[in-house]
Length: 150
View 1 (cartoon, rainbow, N blue to C red):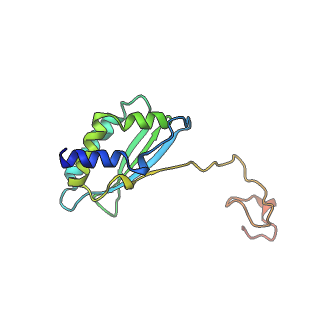
View 2 (cartoon, helix red, strand yellow):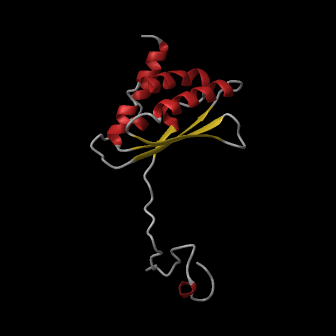
View 3 (cartoon, helix red, strand yellow):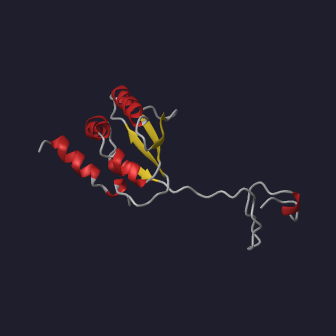
């Protein structure tokens, strides 16, 4: 098996890419990848091609690519899939296999660069604190007590 196939197989089995396909909740994630020096343009073009293809997947809610303003060649791929099964299907596509196979040549990152996320629930209103400490940054006048926002 060629080295690229070995890397692809290992990457697809990395713990960061594993999911419970029975999990029906949305699957947000972010990948942070640095281009190898001098290969920023080539890696950026691979990312553009990936974004175009992934956005056509039926289970893709959003897929946005960003480049750090202060660190050219550092890319952030923000992805959300309808559920874990959609992400698992995404990992089996040819365009993902092609992209993963380019990573060793164009980037210093790898499958460990992908971070699956859990959204932090944000209530519509600021709950009253039971500990005496302030619980929200935007407390109203009745919530500030001594006039200090805590």
